[in-house]
Length: 154
Image 1 (tube, one colour):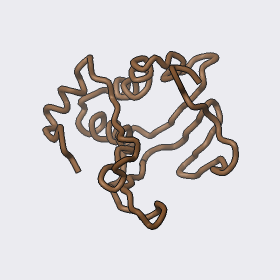
Image 2 (cartoon, one colour):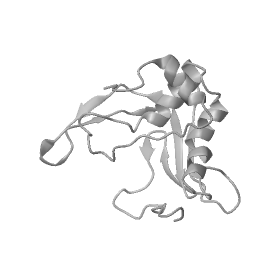
Image 3 (cartoon, helix red, strand yellow):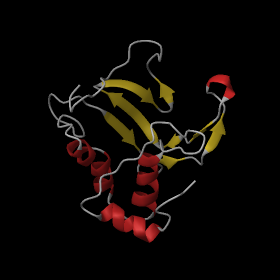
Image 4 (cartoon, one colour):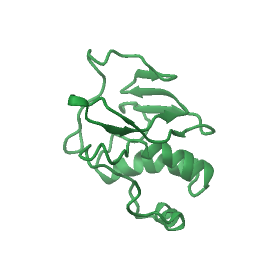
């Protein structure tokens, strides 16, 4: 349900502006009205591939190191020796997201909107593969890789 920034030419200007930092969340408070989980794949599919507003390199930078740097997460958003190795491998020709759909999987049958990612091949968290070709590689009930970040560090 678009409520702001519905003019694509204006949004293109915002995405190109050097002061723009990507981010969107209401922490799930309005899950039956809004699904922002697809924002990264929508950016890569729509604004990078389809519209050419950003290069693929700039789109990835905006989603990774630019955002991490803005929030003081200096060991995140880039690959390097000794860094956590959080990686998403995607196909630039197919990355995107499905249309929104409503599911009723919350307690008491409450509903929420979801969108499925497309074109994502692998997801690695702190060097541990967790997804491959739409298949979970870890037990969601078992120990999971990664750490909660507080104050700019894990």
